Length: 209
Ligand code: B1M
Image (tube, rainbow, N blue to C red):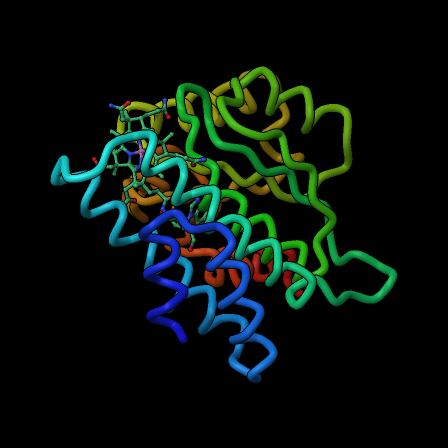
């Protein structure tokens, strides 16, 4: 079944992704297994083919949409909370970067762990992050970057927070494929997470809950 999901993502066959994801869930397969070894595994292969110039942006987008349709089926399984959120988080993909699949997974899992989430979307400027921190009572700011060229925007956002005296108001977490612990340390982030599950653990650690 996992291979069928993976193959359907690869082909960008949205209907098949939905069908097989539902079948896997109905058959009692774990939500994390379906996500990691089915949907994300399929997207990984798309990534390898994209890198090797075997597929191009339109095919990647079609696969991404198919994958997200599968994620939408998993989401209710993640989001099973009580009434009181454990904290508020702001999330966004940084300026210059339009990748949102990983960011959405991180957001979905934070929601699943009972964080209240404000999703600022993609291509989020430092100013937009600052405005959101200023206006709300968010405990955590989560930035995602998939491009080496957009990682600098994380540094700019943290610097702006410092310059405006807002750095102590919020914990900052960063992640995304090119981001490393070393980079996170060098820009003064409070935490780095390599994947969505780790992001949830780190967010809870930062709030000590
Ligand atoms: Co883009 N792209 N892309 N792309 N794309 C990559 C990232 C790339 C690695 C492909 C490659 O060359 N091998 C490469 C970046 C190279 C680099 O800078 N290091 C690249 C490039 C170059 C580009 C363009 C420049 C291509 C072009 O136009 N010539 C362009 C840039 C556009 C822009 O952003 N300005 C571009 C465009 C696109 C599409 C629009 C076609 C599409 C995005 C669709 C969308 O997101 N809605 C796309 C895609 C899909 C990819 C690949 C194939 C897949 C990314 C993905 O969704 N992975 C990718 C190759 C690859 O990664 N293998 C590639 C699945 C996802 C679940 O993983 O996002 O890594 P990921 O998220 C993980 C972790 O990283 C982590 O948790 C997630 C789940 O566990 N994580 C966090 C993410 N954010 C986090 C935040 C946290 C913590 C963890 O905070 C605490």
